[in-house]
Amino acid sequence: MEFFQDLMAYEFLQKAFITSIMVGIICGVIGSFIILRGMALMGDAISHAVLPGVAISYMLGINFFYGAVVTGVLTSLGIGAISQNSRIKNDSSIGIVFAAMFALGIILITSAQSAIDLTQILFGNVLSVRTSDVIVTLVVGVVVLLAVYLFYKELLVSSFDETMAAAYGLKVRMIHYGIMVLLTLVTVASLQTVGVVLVIAMLITPAATAYLLTNRLSTMIFLAAFFGAASSVIGLYVSFTYNLPSGPVIVLVATAIFAFMFLFSPKQGVVGRMLQSNRRKVA
Amino acid sequence: MSVIKRTVEFNHLTVSYYGNEVVRDVSCSFDTGNLIGIVGPNGAGKSTMMKAALGLIPKDDGHVEIAGEPIHRVRKEIAYVPQRNNIDWDFPILVKDVVLLGTYPHRGIFKRPRKKDREWAMQCLERVGMEDFCNRQIAELSGGQQQRVFLARALAQKADYFFLDEPFVGIDVGSEEVIIRILKQLRDQGKTIFVVHHDLSKVENYFDDLILINKELYGAGPVNKVFQPENMERCFKMRIGLPSSLGVEV
Ligand SMILES: Nc1ncnc2c1ncn2[C@@H]1O[C@H](COP(=O)(O)OP(=O)(O)OP(=O)(O)O)[C@@H](O)[C@H]1O
Ligand SMILES: [Mg+2]
Image 1: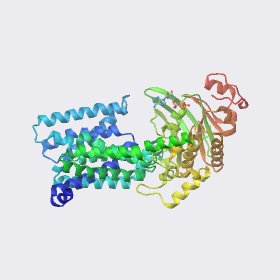
Image 2 (image 1 turned 90 degrees about the vertical axis):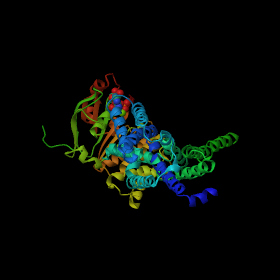
Image 3 (image 1 turned 90 degrees about the horizontal axis):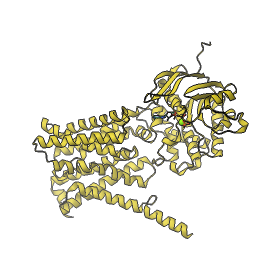
Image 4 (image 1 turned 180 degrees about the vertical axis):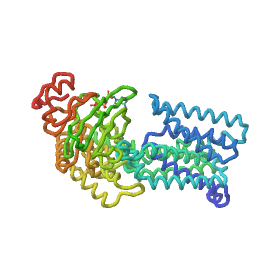
């Protein structure tokens, strides 16, 4: 209960609370599309590729948000360019581009002798969130949720059957790059909560948990947002109470929820299925 | 030579993958209200021709016109049912929602499907005899049932032109009968339907016109003219027991 008293008392904790809930929600929403479109690796790539953007922003003295978005989008364009114009498969071109961007980012950050704390960017520290970061996160959240709401129909059809979508005239390439932009925004917003290295877990794990539970995309998105937010809140509580790093704790909470559903979900649960097949054997 | 344009015209269609020509200079044309089979051996370029005609993959040369318009102007009047293997069957979507996708082309951006769209989707499901399965996830169906659902989605599009890639592969006899019956009904309503097809024994039964392709065109026109032993043997590069009463599978 001490946590809740502190939550009332300390502004820094309130900021952390709001940011991490928002991050949990938008990661769940975008993550749903990422796993259904088979873009998990892409998510990992973008999150690492924002690193040079953060460094360059720092050198220019602007909010790290702008640089991160630019390098994130450049990365997705670069990956697309390689896999479309050569026989190199998508996952390989992802590997080439994102490792290069990550390496570049590390060199820029260390050589700039900047005050940026590399550890903090890599692993996040939600308790150091400033007011301007809260605003960035909220704006990103609104943009992402609005975009998904408005283009839900197009996102659904192009994720399920891209060929049909293209056949009736949807601009499927534009939708793909639109998702990459949203993904970049979400990644940047998540930097302080879970950090570059662990963003992928927030994108994939809550959405995968939701995927186990439902046969409808709309339900999956709501459940993923819920699991994301719940992981953030519980994770923040645990990390604050036991003085553990926030990002890793949040990720482990999300993983625990996934593990629970994996074992016990009514439809896909491993335990349920084992019981069922036993019953069948007995009968 | 007639100057009157026919409804669907393929003009000098040429397509290649990485410099390798798989469809070469295919020209042919068809009238509305016909059921047209596309036949040729494995790897003949049937799927490629269909996809290139619909502008889904780039072509080297040639163009396709429908009702005198280039494809991109008539996209919404076209329903395309791809070969089964490029669908993610585990996608979280129910049968009725798959069919509802068919109403999307005529719903503008930002607009959600309405009640009457849902009702229309259900009617299309009933037409293919799948209404009892409307709340199933799509992986929980047999191959034939899945194909019927995708036909229902095409019906929901209220298209005038249908392009189906191997709709009869790997499905049960009952489903095949349902599908061909509906395709013939559509034809009788004046729709134009292209079907990539494998089973030569059914060709005369199913189609009005035939496209015979193996990279190049080996014949196009009314079935009784094109479906001749010498054409078939040239196209398939082997002796094929015709007539169809022999029921040859290739
Ligand atoms: N994406 C691709 N990249 C490279 N080559 C391809 C690609 N798709 C098809 N091909 C090749 O092009 C040729 C024509 O393929 P296509 O799929 O059009 O044949 P098809 O007549 O539809 O065959 P099937 O009866 O097996 O469906 C084949 O030799 C195939 O190997
Ligand atoms: Mg094919």
